[in-house]
Image 1: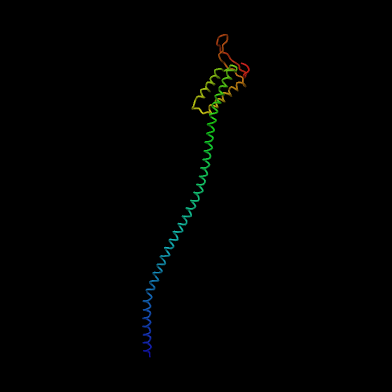
Image 2 (image 1 turned 180 degrees about the horizontal axis):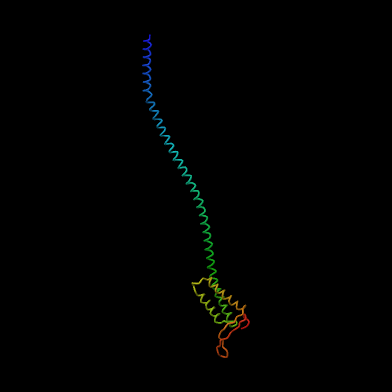
Amino acid sequence: MRLLATSTALALAATLSLSVNAQDSNLEPVVENAAQINQSARQSQLTVDTIAESMQERLQQYKQIMKEIDGLQVYTQQLQQQVGSQQQEMDDLNQSLDQVSIVERQVSPLMTRMIDALETFVELDVPFLEKERADRLAGLNDLMQRANVEVSEKFRRVMEAYQIEAEYGRNIEAYSAEHSVNGQLQDVTFLRIGRLAL
C-alpha cells in the first residue's frame, strides 16, 4: 500500500511536472511577446514624449514670433504715422518756400523804391555828413546788384540805413570836415542839432 501510494504520488508528480513543463513551453512565447510589446510601448512613449516636447518648444517659438510680429506691427504703424507727419511738414515747408519766393519777388522792387526815396530825402535834407551818407547809399545800390547776398540781408541793410537817417533827427553831433570859407577850404567843426540847425 505504501508502494501504491508512492507510485501514485510519483505518477502524479510526473504528470504535474510534464504539464508544468508543457505550460512553461507554451508561456515562453507569450512572455517574450509581452516583453516585446512592453519594449515597443516604452519606445513609442519615448517617441511621443519627444514629439510632445518638440511641439511645446515650437509652440513657445510660435508665441514668441507672434509677440515680435505684434511689436513690429505697432512699430510699423508708428513709423507710418511719423512718415505721414513728416510728409505733411514737407508739404507745409514747400508751400512756405513758394510763399517766400513770392515775397522775395515783391520785396526786391520795394527795397529799390525805398533806396530811391532815401536818396531823394538825402538830397533835399540839410547838407551834413555828405560823403558818409552818399557812401552808404552807393553801398546799398551795389548790394542790391549782388546775387550772392540773401534778400533778408539786403532788407536788413536798407532798414539799417533808414534807422541811421532817423537817428540823425534825434541827436546832437559835432564833427570835423573841410568847408569852403571865402573860397578857401578850411578844417572846421560842425555842430548838428537834429535836422534843425547846422
